[in-house]
Length: 212
Image 1 (cartoon, rainbow, N blue to C red):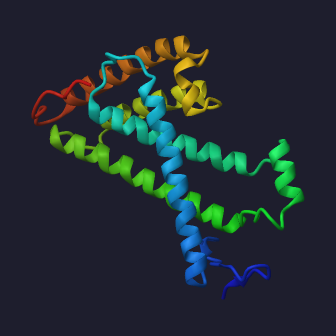
Image 2: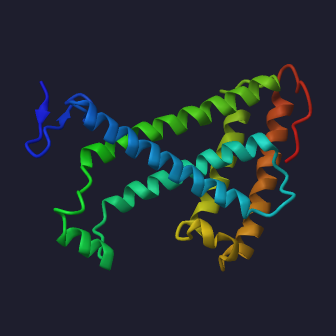
C-alpha cells in the first residue's frame, strides 16, 4: 500500500519513505531538482578546491576524492538548512506569497538528497577502489581505510572554515590564512597515510603516485 498526499497526489513508499512520482510532470520536477542540487554542491566543492594553497603533498586522485567529500558535506549542510525556518526578508515574502512561490515538497527534497548522497558515496567508493587497485592495494585493508579517513577528515576541516562562504567570496575569505595552514598539515597526514598504505601492500606499489 502507499500513502497518498491530498495536496499533489504524491505517494510515499512505506518501505523506505521515498518519494515516488506518479506522473511524468512530477518525475521531471524531481529530476530537475536533483540535477540542480548536484551541480550546486559540486560547484561549491570545486570552488573550495581552487582556493587551497598550491604545492600540497596530495596527488590529483586524492584531490578528486577530496572534492567528492566536500560536495557530500555541502549537500548535508543544504539539507540541514532546509529544515530550519527562513527568517530572512526574502523568506518572509515567499511565505506570504506562497500562492506565487510554490513551496518545496518535503518528500521530493528528502528523496533528492537521498539519491544524491548515494551517488556521491558510490563515486567515492569507486574512486578509492580504482586507486587502490592501480597500486596493488586491498581497498578494504586497514591502511587503505585510514588513508580514506584522512582525506575525509581533511574535507571536513576545510568545510568547517568555508561553510558560510559563497564561492565568489572564497578567495578573499578572512579564514584563508588559517585554511592554508590547516590544509598543509592535513595534506601531510594524507601523504603519510598513503605511504603507509603503499608499504603495507603485499605486492608493493605498481608505480609512483602522481603528484598534484
